[in-house]
Length: 425
Image (cartoon, rainbow, N blue to C red; front, side, top):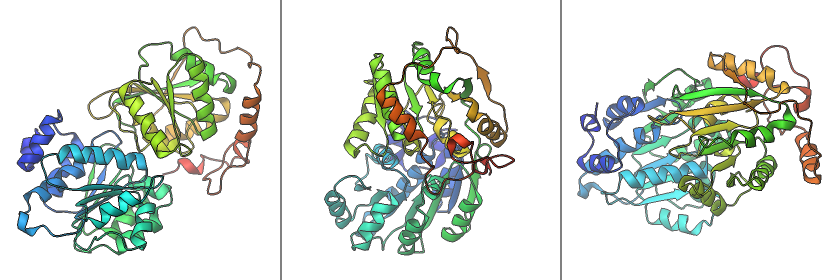
């Protein structure tokens, strides 16, 4: 099937073709026709399968087909997303697909000055792409006109719930016209998401591509069992392979990401970091340098797992084993996107074994164990620097409030019998 067969407006088709796309992904082929017909949708597919185009293209096509005389002041489309990185990525895609349409596009998120965002809302931007928190703040001060809204999109809905945005989303949606199209996209379909669809949608059509909560088939997964004190050395050893040419590394903690980045840089490996302590300009610069190839490795925390849509990531490395099975799915979904393939490597220490077994039950498969040729797994710990000693003390702090599930004693308390709660569906 080609995009020509989906019924998209001619200018949208032209932009899609110029972007180099010739054949829709499965989620696009299944979602675009009913979305184009104005139906509410629930789209369930793994990250990297083209969900953004699946909701963007039909909405833009409907806007393009509207007669010029029917255009009214006020925003027509609202897209809600969990992170500023994802908001920026969606904006880039929307601008590419809408390049031949006279539409104004605004992004709303925290961490930057609000005045440009206020001006865009006052001007009645046709398409608003926003994080719920900042948008709710501006709406509370009566900036923005959504009385003419026609389309609402909840992107990465599962992640927005995980991050506690449901109250903000409810308040935003409460002020929107009820006669609208609502599209909800997610990588997983939990009971909470199903409840959300009943609250916000009208007779939605559910489209599910692939198995729930399962990583994309285009990602080859490996586990390296390694002592905790050798994880950095193992990563540096693996990076001697030039095939690891665009590597996204996930660290659990912000200070751990910074420390690892410094270790890699000291070995001549160009590295950038991405986490919530970085300013918006620093985060955008890190992504830009990673996309351009100026840096080979991007070390990020889970806040970035949903906001990184970069072509050509060769490997994702779980330097720290993820705390939630869903985080594993979303992390490794940063590679093997669309029609490409990629590798996912997870470092597992002895204390991670119960979580690894629970994860394998969750995804319904075992993950291949692998050994790095030429690496000394028996090496003793290197002498600790003052900074590493501080980091070790930090890693033994009590877990944050809201921590789900139980964990080994080194992660904050005794383990319950049975699989950890955080890995249950």
